[in-house]
Image (cartoon, rainbow, N blue to C red):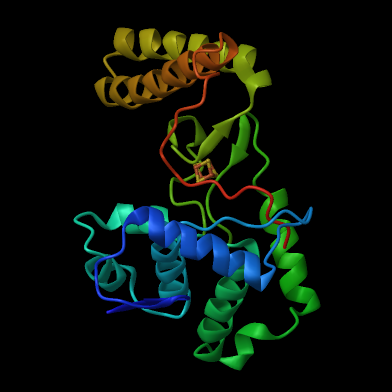
Length: 226
Ligand code: SF4
């Protein structure tokens, strides 16, 4: 049953009638945009508002999706406006909730010794060929065999040094072969292959093979200032 301003009307209203009523209601309410123009709402906008308010109010998006009759949840997500303030508020609420279940001791000021230890960790990551990327607080698990280690971030200025190391490894492999030190040949070859791979990777970067970025489809939040 529908009622418009002129009385009861039992028929299903046409889209044009609904739009006319909406325009009238918005005009009567004096709802304007930033420059004073009367806003225009369509009936479809109310589905978007419903989705936004429901998700913002805590209703799971898959439930909202069912209520709106969407087959695909991503359609519902596209309906849902996420405002910067709401994003910040939700993230802060998430952090507060997470902190509330963690021990208080984790939120104390670090001691002098801990600060020193923290700085030292980064000082000890500076290597001949670049930087060690192992996580803070973890020891070197690869016996400082950096040339073979995947945690080594090679500095682009290390190309010539790497080439020298590779040449030296080749000489040592030749020497080991001529002396029948087969175990040595094996270990040195692993190092040589690792050095060669790092040289190739540096040259690819230098030649711009990786210059263009790859779109991984990760959402980007623009204009958010926390
Ligand atoms: S071997 Fe790896 S983890 Fe160890 S210091 Fe070298 S780069 Fe770091």
